[in-house]
Amino acid sequence: MALNADFIGREYPVSAPYLVGREKIREFARAIGEANLVFFDCVAARALGYPDLIAPPTFATVVAMESSHVVMFDPDLGLDFTRVVHAEQSYAYARPICAGDELIVSTMIDNIRTVAGNDMLTTKASIDTVNGEHVVTATSVLVSRGVDS
Amino acid sequence: MAAGIRYSDVALGTELPSASFPLARVDLVRYCGASGDFNVIHWNERLATSVGLPNVIAHGMLTMAEAIRVVTDWVGDPGALVQYGVRFTRPVVVPDNDHGATLDVSAKVTELLDDNCVKITITASCEGQTVLGKAQAIVRLP
Image (tube, rainbow over all chains, first blue to last red; front, top):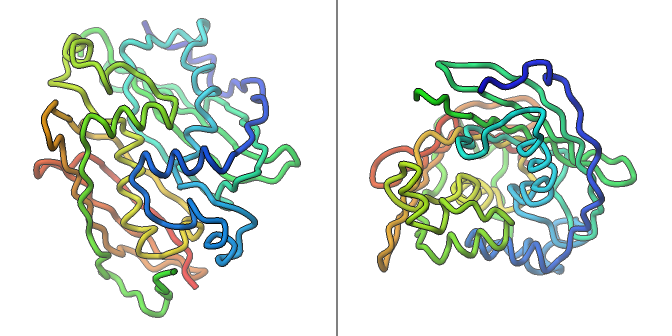
């Protein structure tokens, strides 16, 4: 089923705040095999000028997980989750995510197109503090494989 | 602790120290828990093969996370990262054995930009086949 192209530009409700915790940063850093002390040791992070532990660059995926599910499971959009592949991911950073940040995610559908029978959905998620400071923008491309491919 | 790379030290073609990252089943399970992505194709061989995959595959986001370590370890301060993007072009298949898969990552400077920024192009491969496309990062150096 083709995606509804009318959804280009659709903005989803802003997420509930996500409070970034030190132990979650450490858990995530361990899970990706990190050894850089700025993800584990507050003294090392402060030595680089950060107020607290910083999170690895792809930690934004944890913060945006709930919001991306809202889009993926939006019944009106019509994405067949069983046929979805994560095709591209990019981040534009204003600064690293930091322990203590309270972050909200604003997600919009940037583009929908069909390439060789596959639906391609581009979403943009702006991750900002509850005080309005921009932290990172995450752009994702999901591909829903056509039934013939 | 920072590696202390400065913009003036870098030239077009400068190669970053490469690295290899082992990915066993336990690493995928740990990443499921840490990331919140429990898609069955990352831990259940029966369901992964039922949707046409050769076996359980690593999360693309885990591959992406490992690949950028070559850049952030080189720079020292991960906060130097301005942009990072990849295409997931081929799955990293992780067999159920003692060693799993190995992700080999290399990177080099491919563009000198304004404002002390450099563009780095990353090559990530598994069993000699590239698994990421257009993997590029921009870092701002002192």
